[in-house]
Amino acid sequence: TRPPRIVKNSQSFNRHKSRLFTFGIGKNINTKLLDKMAQIAGGTGEYVKPNKEIKRRISTFYDKVRYPVLSNIKLSVGRGIRLTEMYPKRIPDLFRGGQLAVFGRYKGKGSVAITLQGAVNGKKKQFVFETKFPAKSKKHSFLSRLWAHRKIAYLLDHIRLKGSNPELRSEIIR
Image 1: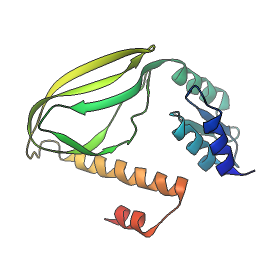
Image 2: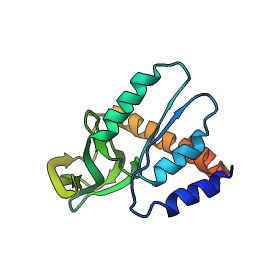
Image 3: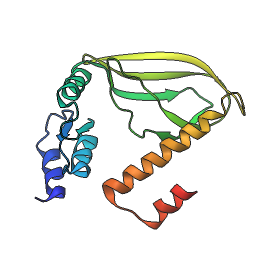
Image 4: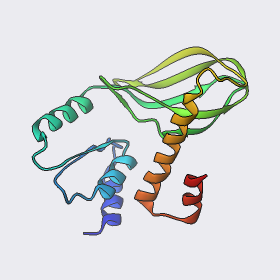
């Protein structure tokens, strides 16, 4: 009956650092609690309203989490480029049929390698992609809007999970 205690217990009893995936069915689900538990344990949550394709949604959810492609993902770039304000803050695991989209800002310019690291079946893997970071570009101007949407979504999630404050509200408005 005490969500903060439940969250704390879910952390302390998770000695093996297992991912926690939550699944809720119904109208009166404490999504704030379930999302916080899943977020802390590196999982995700899924919610279904009563009588809304429950069987299919459970099957889809199970198929998603059953086939991890890359876990414990880290993203880095070569010298001369500094990544800032990356969203999501913690890159989630990638599952079969899924995609990975990370938005952020950068300082610097030039051709560098982007390195994506993670684990595949417990073994460390690294993928390197060469790209150019221009000083300025109007070629992909839509990306700044996508980044702003991700940042606002992150801030709204933070408010939903931890409560609001004037600084967060100002940042969303800005």
